[in-house]
Length: 101
Image (tube, rainbow, N blue to C red):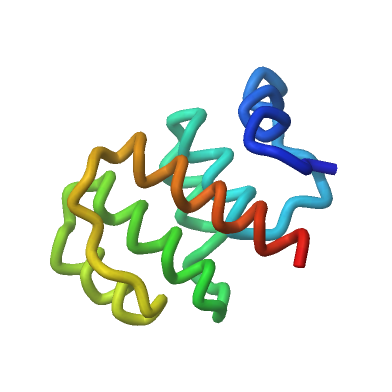
């Protein structure tokens, strides 16, 4: 079970995400591995604010800022202006913290 950012980042050396990861975290795992399509497939049909946030991030990675804006609005999150790496860290941290509550 992923309990910290360090654990999550360490899991990136594996071939697949941990099977118990919630879809938004699993999508971010695939995004970190450079597999945008796998990440997008995971969140595109999820109906949670967390999945919408990751969906927005993925469209920002893709360069489709209009579509990203739509998903950030669905998530109730501001459109990110910082680096993709910083945003990835922020979302992962928020999702891990959410697992603890």
